[in-house]
Length: 344
Picture 1 (tube, rainbow, N blue to C red):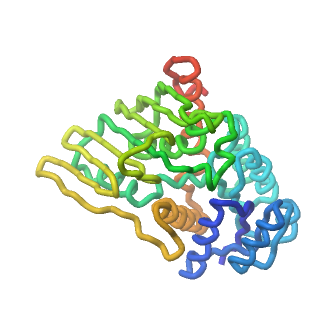
Picture 2 (cartoon, rainbow, N blue to C red; picture 1 turned 30 degrees about the vertical axis):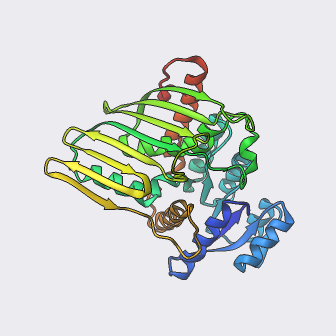
Picture 3 (tube, rainbow, N blue to C red; picture 1 turned 120 degrees about the vertical axis):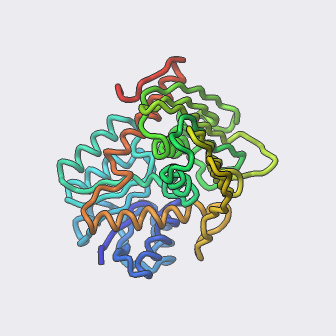
């Protein structure tokens, strides 16, 4: 059994703790044995809820006193570099929430620290682990639509995301850094790496400091073109939060992942329509259940990688490619120019 520790017991970390408990109960070979958080009330509440006896206000003390096989970092981005470098110094594999860091230089330093220490480093980049998006990837790989040449990944909502995560309204950067990183990573997952980025952003909601709307045009290395669009200021007839919608055109057909997880694959011999709704886990709740299931899937993948020695699909090294898209998007929006993310 692999013993892990979770650092950060806030809003989203409850999903991670529930998923870790499921993995332990299903005999998946990992469990959380210690918790760390600077807020004593939040730490005590999480410990009581999940029956974890060993708690610490300081991550360095926890790593020094506990015998661990990995750490799971669920804090906000400004603390990530110090915690990841601390884990690397203790030769501990580390999975870390996104966004990986406040700056690209920080992200590169974190990857370098883990590589120098010889420890696995994975980013909790969970959109590509949502089962409806996995179904889209499988449809592409099945060959029914031929070679994709155009695509769109869209996340548009008016959901009050600030109620549970009020800090989102306070940063100079918002939707590209917090949500766009997921959607951009999905575009990489579906269409491959990117050679050019052209982006436009807007701030519609006066309550937030950063941008809450973004549209990004991606030129992929394989010749495909995709559009990534994100909004938290779209009041729609049907609120789809937190669903991502996907459109793909290929040389022999098309794929559409539309509202309420309807997947339509059109090829030379007609259209196949499937319901690819994610399961509602016992601890999950709508509408978050697609994200919550993806947390369980990504953590299972992390355990499998630790046991097999293979690199995680969302490794720190791989995630630099996604982070570069975020940085290129901000630079393009600021300058009005197309940016090659490979040069950053």
